[in-house]
Figure 1 (cartoon, rainbow, N blue to C red):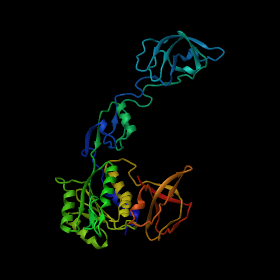
Figure 2: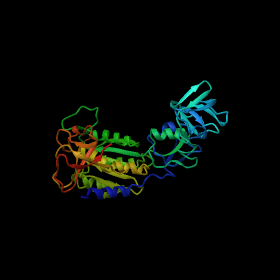
Figure 3: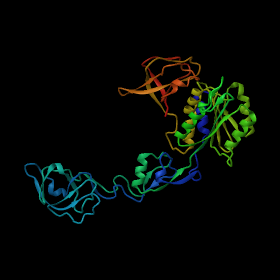
Figure 4: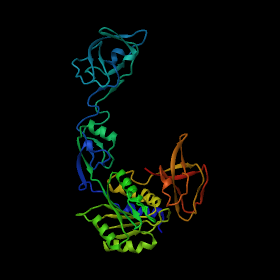
Amino acid sequence: MLPVNEAEAIIYSLVQPLDSQVDTEIIDLPAASGRILAKPITSHLDFPHWDNSAMDGYAVRYEDVKNSNLENPTVLQIIEEIPAGYQPKSVLQLGQAARIFTGAIIPTGADTIVMQEVTHREENRVLIKAAPKQGEFIRKKASYYQAGDILLPAGIVINAPEIAVLAAAQCNQLCVYRKLKVAILSTGDELVTVDKTLQPGQIVDSNNYALTALVQHLGAEAISYGIVPDNEEVLKATIEQAISKPLGGADIVISSGGVSVGEYDYVEKILESLDGKFHIRSVAMKPGKPLTVAAFPNSKLYFGLPGNPVSALITFWRFVQPAIKKLSGLADSWQAAFIKAKASSELRSDGKRETYIWGKLELVDGEYEFVVPGGSQVSGNLINLAQTNGLAVLPTGTKLISQGKEVRVLIVR
């Protein structure tokens, strides 16, 4: 069995991110949510596009108003009113001001904005009752971004803030990485789909549904091959179809079940017949020991996850999810993410393997606490996995983390 950190390092080394010159497509901005940017974005626009006001008030010359106060207000002539979207017509001269609104262009000659709360207007005159700071409330052209610089780097996920930036920069089309294709299959004669009436000894193939949801959540395309019977020829044909470009062309194949000790030679024989090379056969973790990882000459990866539902999800979160994120083109933040939290109750293991306990991270008085759900913590108990958002990690050799003590927690998204 490989230690968890060694298995992680092997998997990361096997993952070669998508090629930014080949594995890309051009999409329209409205379709960009959740996609990964393949090439940096620049804009021909400055931000702000022009000097503009950050406040409703009056555009003035600082020299005219620098000595203003409540007892001796400065009186200026109002020569123009400038709303947002209006091009100023006048040039401010000595003793003059322009009424201006937030976002409006600063008129030539003005260098400061006086907010309206410290003014008093009398027809076409304004009294300035407090001295502003020089340049106050003026947003200078290109102070946020200068045209031609990198606006957004490659390798980031495009979410609502990035879409707002791209829209403002008039980037209506952009180059993103193609969506990964992930083939998902389950093995076992005892498995049935969710719509079937259960017969004695049968169980619903919950893994296929859960893994499909996890893959889709990561922005990849999930290709379900459903339930594959315990038949060597059928399983080989299914995996071959999944990795064959003319037929399936999946970047990653994920199977669940059929990788425990009894069936191991069976899977290894199939993968080797397809020119696959085994890199991981088992990992010193609980749950999730029977994890297998293989790579094909065309860089496609195979992950054989345990059949037990909890084990399948935990090994996915620990190893497969980061692999998918890295492969998809993310420049950073693709690794498994951990935080420190306080254990709300005792956490126990036998200490023989790195142990993962599922539960909920809760923010209490500004501090994260890890809460274990009710019910047994066994890999076959899928029920209390609901609402899991964290996995507490007990290192090998650690049998107890007492209530109130710090524990390392894998964040589950």
